[in-house]
Image (cartoon, rainbow, N blue to C red; front, side, top):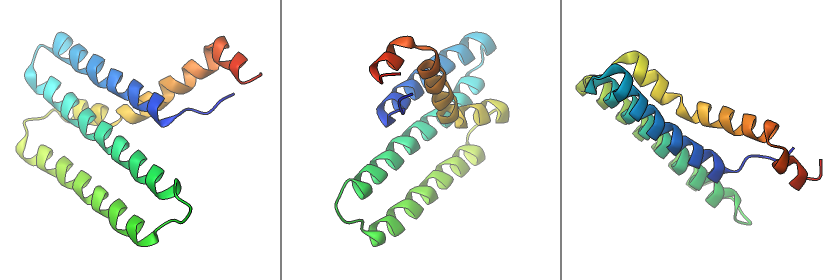
Length: 128
């Protein structure tokens, strides 16, 4: 079975963000739920993208700059925490929809793995 690529997971994550946002506004009919899901999902989507770029840049080179990783990763984490804290303190959010939005990367990974497992065309490409 082949491995998932960062681009595939990121594309599915954007799809989950869009479909989840539309579903939250259509089902709940209140902006609070849409805002909670959309903001949390966007934060996690951007976090995944930035983390992927940091890892690709760090491990794509012949030598890994430990100082660069020691600065970029904690800084990215602090920015992520600050964004979540700002939204929770100043935003009118629903905690359940916010947590579901924060889990969109996990949902995207699960969807990607299910599609790999059940798509016979992808298995033929790998020789299995």
